[in-house]
Amino acid sequence: MVFSVLIACTSSKTQKTFEDKPTLKSDTIHIANEALEYEVIIIDGGFTSWFNTHARPRNYYSQSYLEARNRFWVTEWNRRVMFPSQYNPNLYEMAINYDNSTDYGYEVNYMIYNYLVYFQLTNKQQLGGFVPRI
Image (cartoon, rainbow, N blue to C red; front, side, top):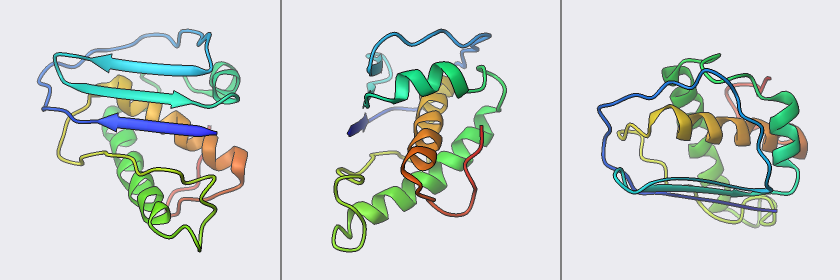
């Protein structure tokens, strides 16, 4: 499993809304916006199937809800990356560059949130604080 998130953004003032959840068709999910200079790449063979059958539709959760969960879970994820002797380095391969002060918008937060829920449920991991739920 490879989970790669590359995020280097500037703050966005516009907010997009997504009314429905489109079906993902590939095992590689790529979200990019050159104007905001961010890129999220998720490569995981099981995520697409899980997302299509379990993820809540867009706008089910507010952006602030997603951001709060992502901040907490990404912080714990990154802590585990730094301790490969304590946590499985095959699960926590690389840090996630997620800046808490940046507005990545709904879509990025939605996809990161869903991946982290999937990751925790699939790998029987708990990144602490909030129990992942669908």
